Image (tube, rainbow, N blue to C red; front, side, top):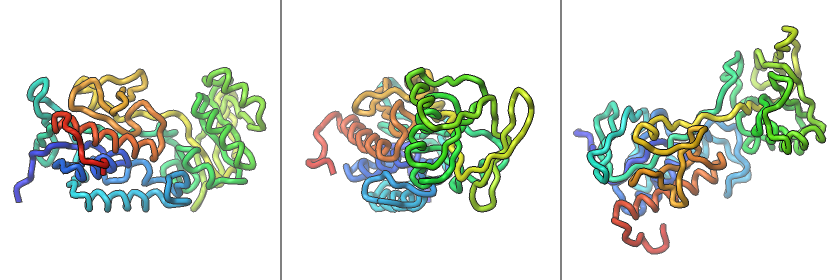
Length: 317
């Protein structure tokens, strides 16, 4: 069967933002293609439990991702997984977009970039194996799972300190592990930290995360003395920041901030006409609920762009 290469809207990225955009766009009647370089789900699929997404008091990340994927299929959008977009070109300033992939070159009137972002990793033994089993990259997402337990937060910036402060409210004990003897976080944030019961382990780096089925300890090394010691914990929160997957967007001139996050307006539009962005790749709060909202707005804006700003379906459903 010949591959259909002509589409009205192509969405790049199959996390919550991309899947929501696909659902809305297809319901609007747009011929919609969703491309994902891996499999649909995004970062949410790795979470052992989500408790802050409306409608679910608790749901495993992969289960929520699977439900979203089923809804995308029912909406009429077409999904192509394991399909990486290698490059994007445009025929003219207001022409169609050409997306080069292993399946061929797809053509689109508009595109939504929802490529997400990757958390920075420690790259130490045990980190990958125990991700979702005590290793987390989001305190807001997974913190309640560690209520009344002992956890460690790794990092020294605003994200690390604010996550440690949040965890201190719900856990029994919080350690903040930082490789230097001073924090990078803003002074106001540090003031809150030093008034709390959080124990800061200075000049320390994580060398290994250990556990069988679940995290039970980390091995620390003092960068000044070289001494190592084991710290008993139930969870390790890696808060080194994130790296937005925006290289593809930047290759066609999409504007980003100093962190590489895509800059968008209130309609999720970028500085390039016909290019919209949603989810963790944009400058915003990194949460599933936020990404879903972005996806809906981006789809609505893409519909207006493609239909020459004609009014969308009554009720926006």
